Length: 202
Image 1: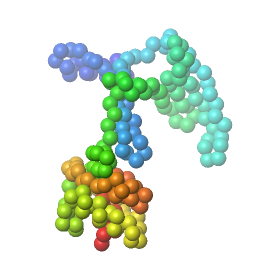
Image 2: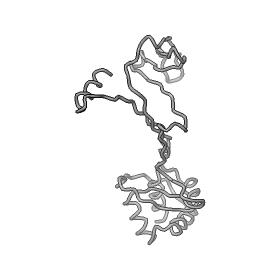
Image 3: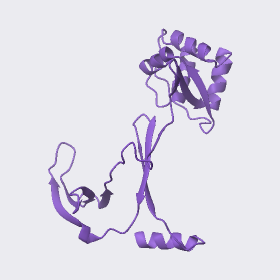
Image 4: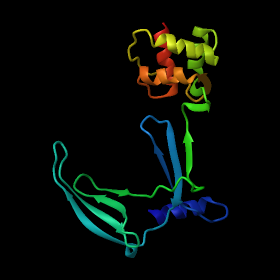
């Protein structure tokens, strides 16, 4: 498979070369912070590895399984797990580069700190427009005050709608307002938090 894909890339590249890489994207459950890095993709040399069978006994709803664990000879690190009985698949393992590695990319897509008392939330343009219509402004002081007042009311967990998320608008709030947003509603994103605020203000 690696050879076939490399050949297809060579054929589509005017220079006739192929620099093959694997990209890994890791994320937090709440989708705030992400890590991205790449490593060279090449055909593994079987002589660089050894393997051991591993059997896992049934526990609760989980069925018993038998897997082939493949280790790198030079480091004794597990590099692959081949599952058999639970449906054949090959699970690769990888090393996350250190934070100082220039090839490791870290990015945060929600709730960025701007200064000591300002948090920026990134929300959909449609949500920002609704908020501006409801509050008259999306200035930091106005939105922060609305958050503080809204959390004092009873509120439910409202549904999350995805609308125009491709156009993100920054909305600033104070640290106090941001802490209240986090503690008052369970939300999946900055936009969802602002949608919950809008519902609470009604």
